[in-house]
Length: 202
Image (cartoon, rainbow, N blue to C red; front, top):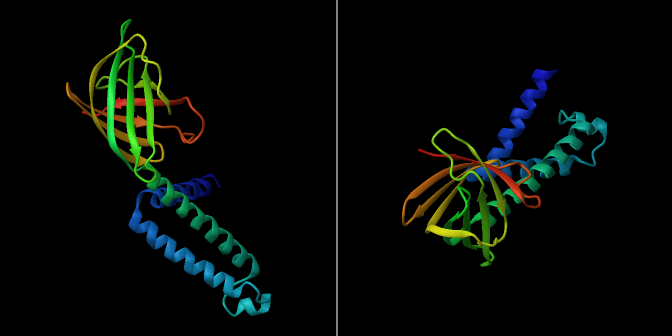
């Protein structure tokens, strides 16, 4: 039973990843489930005896209809989510606190779809991670006070979303380029502050 649940969970994870991160496969999946939904709707009103002619029963029709609707809703959510992630005019500022290793990274960008200017701030109490050291980071979806901080670098940044819980950031500054891997909790869409884990990419 545990093996069966594990297989189902693994298959579910693969479908979610395909829907969010494989545009071509997502398009094919959408077409397949649209066709399945249309077929299920066509046989929905048939009686049990009539369904047997199509090797179907009422329970299968209900299950396939429900699954198709859920998958299609997920595909639409994924499409909007990916579209919302697109940004332009990306810049960052790196600030160091006068009393220690604490850093603040402020990201400024424009949402490509809405044209809205936006700001995100990361606070790194332990400073930047080392080659083998993972550090905690707090992400705020707003601008924070920089009192006590001094700017030590600035430039542009690039974002690559790997999965729903992982992303890579490249900060191309005037002083140096920093590449970071971030682990994001699945609750990323909830209220701030959001706890991240940062790892340096060699």
